[in-house]
Length: 462
Image (cartoon, rainbow, N blue to C red; front, side):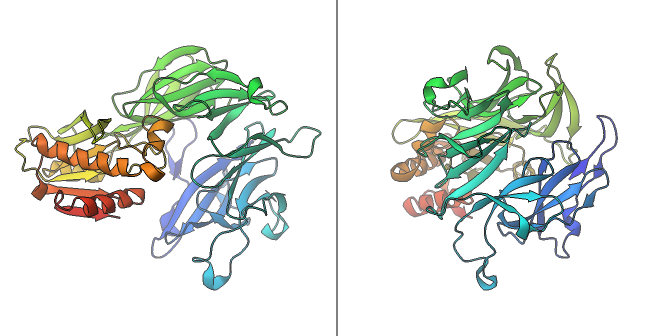
C-alpha cells in the first residue's frame, strides 16, 4: 500500500504486509481516516482466517500505535468519532475452538485511542438474536451513528443516533430486513441513502432521522432502467455509477438530484471509486476492462474532465486481445449477457481451448475486469468467457432474486446455456471446454458438472 503527498510527488510505501510474517501469509486491508486525517486504521488477517486485528497508524510518522482491537471479522471497519472509533466484534473465543466455534453475539463498541480493548465502551447489542451481524458507520461530519443489523446476506434494519442531539438513544429508521440501505453521507439534518426499497434497480433517498416514516422520505434520484451499482457524495455532488448490460456508465448530479453531466469513461469497462470529502474539488476513480489494465483517473468536479493519475505497467501487451459482449437465451428464454475474450485472428473452428467462468449469487455483479491470468491464457490461444448469469446484481434486485433459494436452478441453466452457445457458434467443443468458479461459483460448477457431465471436459469447483 502506497501513499504520496500531492498529485505529482513520488509515491512511497506506506504498509508492506510481506514484512509482517516470515512465510508471507499476512494480508492487510486499509481502513478509514480520522476526521482530522491524522490517523488511519488497517486490518490484519493471518493465514486466510476471517478473524482480523484492527491497528492504527499515525500517518505523518507512519508509526503504528499500541492500540490493538482483536476478534473482529476481516470485513469489519472502524467508524471514527472524535479521538476514537466504533467497531463491531465478538468476545474472545476459547483458544482450541477459535477457528471452529459458531460466532455469536456480535456487539458494537467504542474504542478511545490509547486505552486497552478491555476498557472499550459497549454501544449496541442484540442478545435476543445472537446470530445476527451488526455493523457501525458514522457520517463524515461525525454527527450521525448508524447501526446496521442483518440476518444473512441481504436486507437490513438500520438504527440511527444523532451524536450531537439531546436524545441518548437509537431510533429505528428502517425495519423488517426486506431491503438494503447504505448511507452515502449527511447533508445537514438529512442522511442520503442508496436503497432498493420499492426500487429493484436502486434509488437514492434523503431521510430525516427525526421523522423517518416513508411518507417523509425525499426521493433524490429515482430508479432508472439500468441498475445503480455505486453512489457517492463528494464535493457537494452525487456521483452515480450504473450498469448497462454489465458495463459502467457514470453520471454527476447536484445534491438535490439534478442531473449535470455524464462522466466520459475511457471505454467499455468497469469503473469504481469517486470517493472523497464534501469540500473536495476533485475525486479519483479506477477504470479497467479485459484489455485495459487498472488505471486511476483524477476527475475534476467543476469541469468534468478526467486526467490520468496512475497506470499499471505491464510486462506484456494487451493490444491483441479482442473483447466482445454477446447475448444468448437460457432454457426459459431469458436474455443473458456474456463477455468473450480471445486473441485477434483466432480461428473459430470449434477446437479452441476455452475457460468458462461463473459466479451468479449474492447480487454481486460480474463484468469486464482486468486479470493477468485471463491475459496469459488468451495470449496462449485460449478463449475466456464470462456469462452474467442470474443471481448476480447486473440487472438489479429482480435479477438477484431470480437466481436464489427455490430459483437457484436458473443459475445452473444460464451457465449450461452459455456452454451450449459457445459450442453452437464454433468457439469450442466439449473436449476443449473447462468450467471454473470459486466460492458461490464453486457451487455453480459443482452443480453443472453433476447435472451435465457430458458437456464439459474439465471442471474446477473451488
